[in-house]
Amino acid sequence: MTGEGRATAAATTEAGPSEAGASEALAECVLCRAPTESPESHKGITLCPVCEWREAERAACSG
Image (cartoon, rainbow, N blue to C red; front, side, top):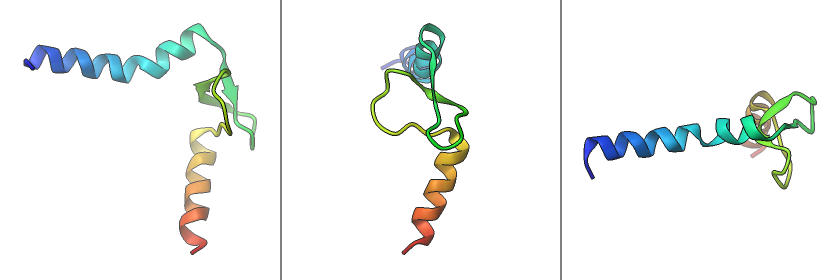
């Protein structure tokens, strides 16, 4: 793969969530109701980046 091909692949990977968010409304965080990075069609529990970080801290310290 050439350098140009890698740059294009990286650009499409990074742009994925933002493109989905532009065409569809963002889901609300189930804990604080803030907008998340996931579209409303995302299945499962959706957390904003802050709540996701806090949940990861709680899980790491509960051992």
